[in-house]
Image (cartoon, rainbow, N blue to C red; front, top):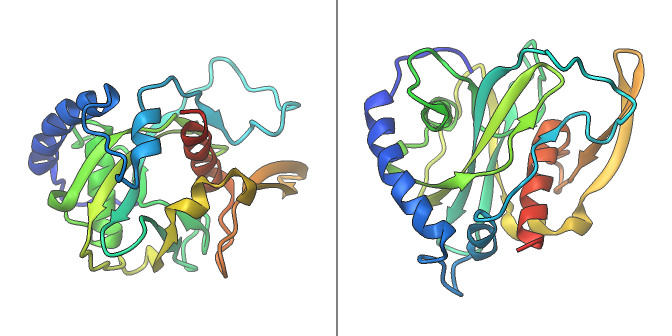
Length: 231
């Protein structure tokens, strides 16, 4: 999530092309019955609702004048060579913040990033070695507010097979894939609770094998599943 030389020039080219493609997809022009992302592409044309780490904790009163920092994550869906899969990371256990947790590649917006799409692409390039030229950005999932004060824009993208992941040393311990079908199944999600800063906090979790996916990552995935279910 640290700063590095920006990939702004390629991101700008990709983003300009993306906006045209996304508009077509929202009108349904490029959605086919065999597209594994069909339900999501159709749903992107609808109105989603922003989510928050506080959604399941209605007793928390947030200051209306709170200042949030802009951030973005890439929600990369690997297509081809079998069923569609979402690429996720396990953060380094040596990190100060959220060590060992499951996350999307992403981070805060750098001054050099022309927009939040560029932020997501840059972070994915750094954290998992994803070439932005191998990415087709499809649109944006509902924004998500975190307890740490970030306004996160989830950028939904298609990644074409083959993709050879490369974990960023010191930031990422593991890169793995979860079937998209698993993450679009609302029945896989559950509400759990734990203490945070002295208070009980409810949160979404969507476990997969040995991976405990929870918190902001699970909430963003839940928004994605809700969108697909409401198409």
